[in-house]
Length: 134
Image 1 (cartoon, one colour):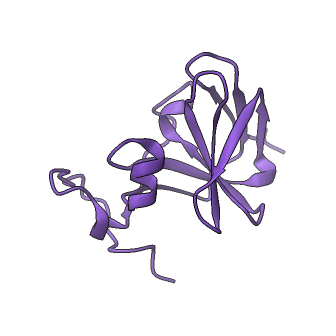
Image 2 (cartoon, rainbow, N blue to C red; image 1 turned 90 degrees about the vertical axis):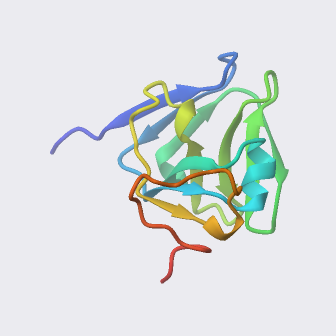
């Protein structure tokens, strides 16, 4: 049996470290207004992992940004690291928080109906006005 891929990362100050095992469920860039506000950025680029594949060490805090998601960040430096589904099923990990920030490349853009007007999407990836269709 082949060894499972493990990728690690953490926050700016190093107080929080995480470990993600295996491959993500998907890798997307979200342009919704909640992600913009939560990240303080034009979008949230993240890899979605099954909650059981993620191990987090360090002192974090969270904010419930909706009924479905809570945003998790380092208590010491404030680095925004995760969007965790409140049902416990999955966690989105900020791509830039991985030690190898090029470990994953997004495969699609979601909620482009809410993207900032000056953001130009010319990467050739699929774009969806809302979430990905079923």
